Image 1 (cartoon, rainbow, N blue to C red):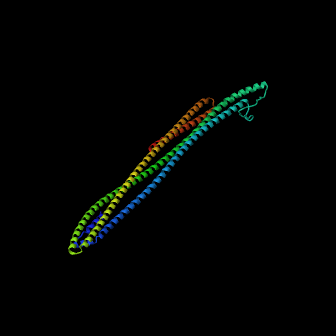
Image 2: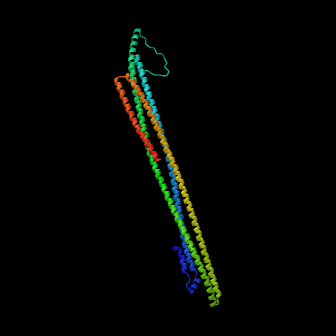
Length: 452
């Protein structure tokens, strides 16, 4: 307000005090207009500097926004690549577990084939013992197509009868002993195979649980990082919004103040203009009367006064032009303010769109966590089914063992009982470990629900 009141004070200080000063002012009126023009030029230079500063600020903000948008787009691309890599890792883990299941199936088939091979060898040995031959004398080969005829040696009838009786007695003894041995050894082999399968499944389940825990930790860390990044983005955008709103408010206040000061100065200038026009008319009247009375060449004085009046009118027109120029500049500034408001509205809309995208991304992550939970539940059900199958096999083995002790000897019975106890203890340990695994899985489920 002080700067705007300066021209008014300067104009008020230029009022005439006496008739002698009136003549001097009329003869030299150019200094007054020069001071006004200098003041208005200074004011216009200030406004141009402010306008250029605002343009530079807008360009800087625009460049910063462009760089931030580019960085955010690159960050989104990197996040998409990371999510794709995570999906590939999950698929590879699933493929690895499938291969392990296939390996387990192959090991079970291999064990069954070993048991069959052992039984076949026992049968062959039994047949050799029945015939009275040993492995040192004969070497047997099994082929698909057996060609040729077997010619047996001929003996006298008495020797044949004696040999047949001895062979029958030997066969009875050997068959009874071999059957007991075969049953016990087959059961021991099956027990060993089942124990190895259980241990292998135990290792696989432990590895699977460790992988799930690692996945949980990685997912929780990624979630924390994403939440922190999103909070930083939200805080940054909120601070930018506040700054833009504050700048808008400041610009609006400045414009309102400039309008008020301009209107006040305009009214003051109009009043001063009216006053000076009145003084000019009075001076013209007085000068006209004095020159007509005193000097004979009054026509020249009137012409001089008319020329001065025309000069004053031209200066007044220049002032009016300057006032219109200032009004145009004020309109331009209003247009710039409206443009800044539109930019702020666009920034708000972009912020809303980004928040919506973030919400969709969060929903996608939630669905992903639900899929992982379903997968874990299905794997747990598969473990339960495997445990049931193993329990059924153990029950069948126990039944076979209960049937077998009548034929076996005391030491073999003790060994079988010890092996049965060991298998039961192992089964109990596996049950306890599986219950612990189940509790861990439920804890993981609860943690995932809390995270979602």
